[in-house]
Image (cartoon, rainbow, N blue to C red; front, top):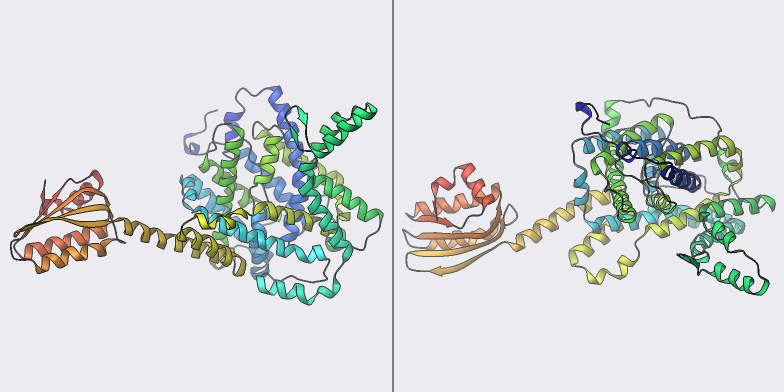
Length: 556
């Protein structure tokens, strides 16, 4: 399918994925989409509640954003929707600016994401250092876990504060309302999610998990053919098992725990109403910091997720620019239906892949599956204990954090340690906006320091009337001070000195580097000397020629 010329940069992956699409592939996408749709339901509710929103905000974000990202995105199998990484940000924005301004900030972030993709700047996201990504990811995981202690312990706290120390104080002062039933449900949920994959772990063609081994023994003793049932049960996602079994357990025993129904009054079965937020330029300017945070985090998370999907699937690689444009459209649209920020989600994308997805059709099926579940089974969600969702989010936080990186810090440079630990502590103690700003600024400073240390000026020879220097590396604004010793030599040398610079190992030159070379040339000319430059590479030579500097000196 050929798009109009003005839409040439906009090429959703689904257009190419549907070429030669077969019934067999549709069957795989249908099964994968239904599976990931079931998985997405408890996660969407949990993410929204943890963000200080109603559960339906997460559900409709998963439906609308998930459908748009699948329809318009640049990845074949990525699943979009609300993500754990946004919990801390969204909660902080709602606490500081209010829900209406969250919607405006999300829509503005959508515009930024679309522009990033349309201007083909998707690859710039890869310039964010991995140490910063690891630092803020681990910091977010810690904050998610901390935010869930209230519901895990069943504490009666009317409103949890947004900052780290205030949360700890609130938890400590309300420990007298501790609920053992809530703690039991949450712990069982967490342990169940940890053990579920191990319980039914299998190798291709044979069972080797705990349940599989036990059933093999039963087969030997009683001749029962139960392995097929084991395989069926093992395909049921752990979050779904935990949600259904623990909700039924709490309801049957009438456990005194807070539920979705008791806090939010249940989930409406109707479609969300379209509403326009009250936009104003003054509000947009006020919300610039959170808007940038949502856009940067959404871009980083979605493209990291797409890269993971590429490595696992073997399908054609994603288009980062198209993916950012799809994320932009999704984040621009969902606020008009009361939604929250959305991005690519690694857990649901991996589930989609393992269930056999082959194209974005699976993502569309996932969104439709969620619609069906909400319209049919919404009243049942009112019985879900919040402690179970807390256990689910603790598992999400545990899987999100790259905890081994702390143990491996001794293997990395001091720069890496400073960036990672600095970003981690700033995320936990302050917020992600501050952490990203300081982290990127610190990364730039350390990069300049590192690059400047690689530039060297070495004296290679001297006579009564000449002196030779060799330049190594990149002469840019961070390294110009290393020309000062050469200036000192020239100023103390006799008249008529010939200064030769061997630039064969000079890799690059910027305006500041050119300026300091101009100062050196003036100092030499004032003393009746000559400056000779030899072995210029293409980039430095082009800079000198364009500025007219090359015409003033002698080149060999």
